[in-house]
Image (cartoon, rainbow, N blue to C red; front, side, top):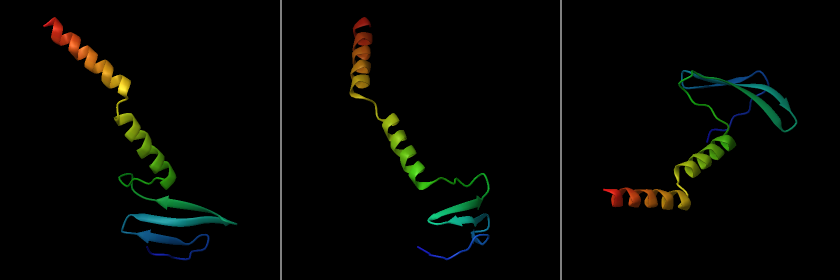
Length: 80
């Protein structure tokens, strides 16, 4: 990990397309501006972790849903 010290108004350039600018520092809170092309995803780490967890939960069917699907498929087989 690269660690840099920056003051308000100073920037860091990442690659050719991304610029991170320190906008304001108040105590232990730092406001950061990120200039990046739309093709580059920029997310706060805690929100990304929450989103990934939510997506995993949505992608994993509940036991009730699996049982209901199995029951429905069983009924279809019997009808044929």
